[in-house]
Image 1 (tube, rainbow over the protein chains, first blue to last red):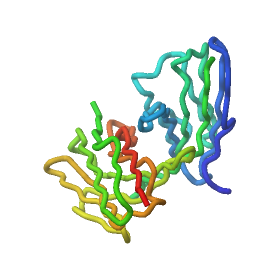
Image 2: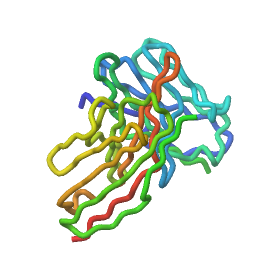
Image 3: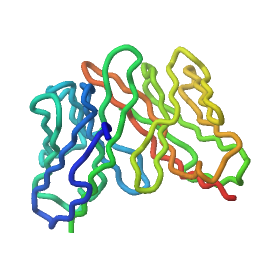
Length: 115
Length: 114
């Protein structure tokens, strides 16, 4: 499968713990996005990378959230001191820039449950 | 700020009927409008998209229309089938500075009754 892959698919943690999610985009895609989705809602933008540069981070994102894409390939999303309100599906998506590009290819998501 | 409104939030139709979902967007500079289908427990997948240089696009039973003046676009599904049952999301591309992203609506849960 050469699509976007995310790991882990499910994570259950206790409040106050740190969690990290990994995303491996489609290999030739230079753009990578993290979105959060809660039940009954559309994907909500968190952050965007072009190659290794983080070009935008949502104003709604607290300082407990950090994302990296060190070599312009895979990315990690870390949530520190998790809260129950962080429970959601975290979706990674990738795309390619240039021309008529625009389609986002989503991974299956990492579901976080904070107890 | 960027915003996409989507209606209705739920839609129930009989098999064979048509379904229409409508979205409005806030940024007149948006130039790309995709529609994604998400089945329960699955990833969102693109089903059709339209760019701002055209007013309508069709792909078999699915069509999308765009009215740039009014800043709204719609998804039309004809001859609906039970396998069309899913949540559908519209989105608009938001470009600001060196960044661009898709801003999504809240979704429409479509149920096609056999």
